[in-house]
Length: 207
Image 1 (tube, rainbow, N blue to C red):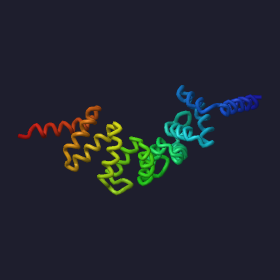
Image 2 (image 1 turned 30 degrees about the vertical axis):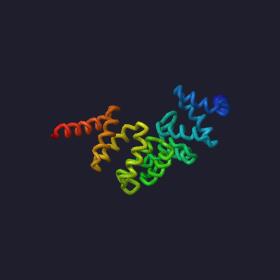
Image 3 (image 1 turned 60 degrees about the horizontal axis):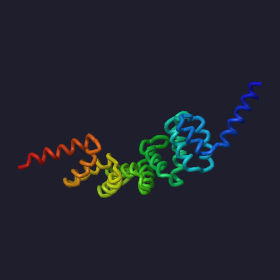
Image 4 (image 1 turned 135 degrees about the horizontal axis):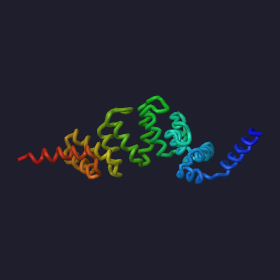
């Protein structure tokens, strides 16, 4: 008898999930009902819905409604990324950069950061700038680092503003270094404030 009750409950739950919309999944997610939203998103993700694939990757990544599983996160990020979702492309790049759910691979990280960066994602642009600045997955290239840091910095990314200042300082372009340190400092970035203070102290000591 218990088995029949369980079977009926499972059938009713499955029917409910089948009749749910993607909006229902997001509502359940926003309400913190992760297990229910996971089932709804999984249904749509398997049908090829890019938004569901991306959020399913997030849920496996964070362990929401399911045990944290980096390999599953990579699987769903990849499916969404291959459909052009730049949030998923960026996250997939992070997974490769950190070796989460996949073997660490800087070349793959660069590949996916670039795809997201070319769509205007500031975080991806910043990280791509870092890869060029550090020579990870690509040859070290100051011009490319500046290009991608600038794109992110112009969108207000404070880390990119600071790092752009660092690159210009290393290239002895004090005017540009100060410009970008100031922008980051005005957003409260401590390292930029310290570096900007160093310039002020240096220049105030000049005759």
